[in-house]
Image 1: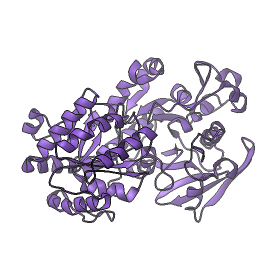
Image 2: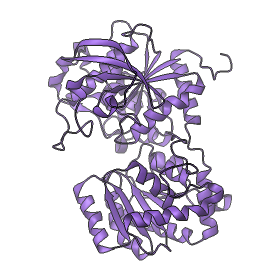
Image 3: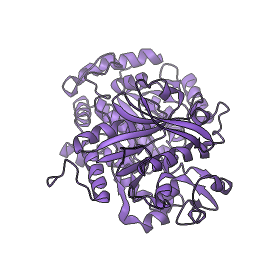
Amino acid sequence: MEVLSVASEVYPLIKTGGLADVAGALPGALGSRGVTMRTLVPGYPSVMSKLSGGRVVKELDDLFGVPAKLIAARVAGLDVIVIEAPALYDRPGNPYVGPDGWDWPDNWKRFAALSWVAAELGMGMVEGYHPQVIHCHDWQSGLAPAYIKYAPISTVKTVMTIHNMAFKGFFGPEIFGQLRLPPHAFGVGGVEYYGGISYLKSGMECADYVTTVSPNYADEIRTPEFGLGLEGLLNGRADTVVGILNGIDTDAWDPSKDAALAQTYSANTIHMRQVNKKAVAEKFGLDGLDGPLFCVISRLTDQKGMDLLLQATDGLVDLGGRLVVLGSGEAYLEDGFRHMTARHPGKVAIANGYNEALSHLMQGGCDAIVIPSRFEPCGLTQLYGLRYGCVPVVSRIGGLADTVIDANPAAISAEVATGVVFDPNSAHALYEALRKTVRLYHDEKLWKKIQRRGMKSDVSWDTSAARYADLYATITGLMTNDDPDH
């Protein structure tokens, strides 16, 4: 089976968040399931710089007003089709945001072009390439199902995966005439959303199936609290909404051979993590590491609950904990953590921005990772934490609740606990969770059991890839090589 994955970012070519990790890992996981997946991605500078040996498979004179080429290549283990359109994608820095900190004003066009190319590939634009399924990720590819739905003739099926409902790709109605859609597509059953156009809503409305990145989140977004105005649409097509957990690339995230660590280790040599803890302490200028070292690797936003952690930081230090933060985001939160660094020198530290190697070292050296999100479709950092013995402390929400088992008395007795889960989502509940974590940490035998159990959790793509392969087979009526009757 041929599947075209459509993503605005894919690791290791371009990454701003977890979407890139998913888009980068899923193709490899599906290979053993009889699914061949190519990934369509915009030709940003970082993508173009990594291309070598590619071939032009299509030239376009008019891709929303600009010339473009489609380049097929094999890069970093991925089969990709790259849209080389300098007028749309040859821009420095973040792929969505300009140097002034605002979204690029033509993002509507840049990602309409991505979606349009995806649909045309699905309908045979390139001779010899006929994918049976187009798998769209988030709003940036959300128009692709609409282009398929409103095409005169099309047999290709579409799947729309929601990684985060908060980002809807909303634009004013004035762009509709330039989207290459028929007039009747601007309606409730098409791309229209509260008088404007939402690319995410378009994909959710027009795709054959909608998936989210955890079963719990699939339920949550059908409620007013988390559906953000789209819960009615989802409830109306509940039989085609599926939650499939994300996995992680267990080769890229493997503490037994991770070059970013000061010391590699396994579940059987977990005591060797202490070398990494010292390396993290040196990197951040910490002192007194007899207590637990907590970390945050996150966008610093209210959605991620960072304001709650900021309120709980004084209490965490009083408990004997240390905190290191890697991330950037809302100015008041960055300033708040910098203030905490000055208030608690040697005990709290922050590194602004994102650093892939440092994130690996932190997972390999810190004792616990704090993820107090207000909503979290799946989350990957807690999966990395489990894999590395960095015990997750998470809010009982979305995929966090699906992947972390709270160390309550019953779970400890049954020997299934893998972390600390708290609710409600408040600074007080977070502080109590941190206090509980400190108590667990000082029970060395129990703590190591929790760490080892997390490290042995199945956080790979194996189970989830099988579910995606089954979904593709269901909507196409085709069998994959993994089917017993194939």
